[in-house]
Structure formats: C-alpha cells, structure tokens
Amino acid sequence: MSPRVVLVGPMGAGKTTVARLLASAWGVDVRDTDLDVEAMAGQSISDIFIDSGEAAFRALEKDAVALALKEHDGVLALGGGAVLDPDTRDLLAEHTVVFLQVGLSDAVKRVGLGTSRPLLLGNVRGRIKALLDERTPIYEAVATHVVDTDGRTPAQVAAEVEELLG
Image 1 (cartoon, rainbow, N blue to C red):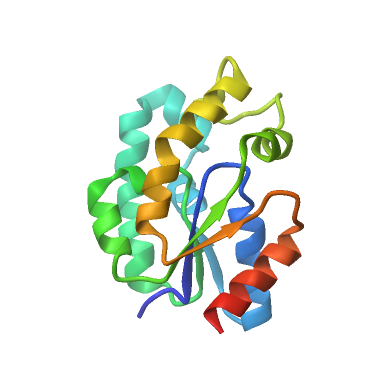
Image 2: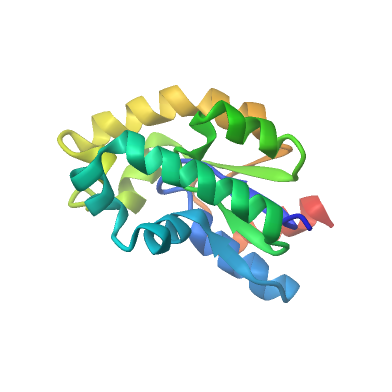
C-alpha cells in the first residue's frame, strides 16, 4: 500500500486544503500527519511544543509519517518540517511527492500575523523567511514534482497536481 501522492511544503502552501480537493476528486481518503501527531499525543501541536519541546514533537512526527506512508493509500499531507528528518526523506524516495512551493509574501498572507504556530513566535515574517530559506532545498530534493502556489487558488493548484499525475 502506498499513498497516491504525498504533499510537502511549508506552512501556508495549502497542503491540507489541496489534499482535501485531490482526495475528493479521486474518491480516496485524505490524511494529514499533523492531525495524526495530535491524535497520538492527545494534545495540539502547540501544546506538544510547549510541554515537551520541538524534539519530542519531531519524534512523534517521524513515527506518524512512517506509519502513514506504510498504511495510507489516499492523499497524504505532511507537516512542514517532516522532511527535516533524514529517515523520513529516505522513506519519501519510494513515493510520488509533490512540493507545493509558496513565496514569502503569499505564505505570510496565508498564515497570518496573529498565528498559533509554535515555530512562528516572534517576528512572523522573519521566521517564515528563515524556514523557507532552510527548507526549500530539502523540499526540492524529495519532490517528484514542484507546483507553484503563488497567486493561485487551491482548486487551480489541485488541478495542476491532477494533470501532472494523470
């Protein structure tokens, strides 16, 4: 069993929204590893970061991604930082991965400046830029396809993914 497609990208790229649209179009289930982590931990990602720290969250995320890649056959959306783990990157090599690319301006607009995302505490625009700079080469390295989301609706992005994957 293998996901039909795995969506990766930074926060604000629209992974969850595009995943839902693709799953609906293809008549398959959608799974989001951020939701899996919250279910495993019994608390929100923000609370995991506060109570246990980022390392504990990343360990849960790594397990959630490995399990989802093994048992899910629909559309899978990964959390923005999931690709930071080398073992996760190795697992992704066996799958069709689409990197939903988003620029700084669109990411900031989509995420918003009053956000509950734990990695964005402080200067939101500066943190998003740093995350994009750090992670974009990793997203590109694991991607089978790259789809630009800037200035496009989720439906337009999903349509391009559908076209790429036939």
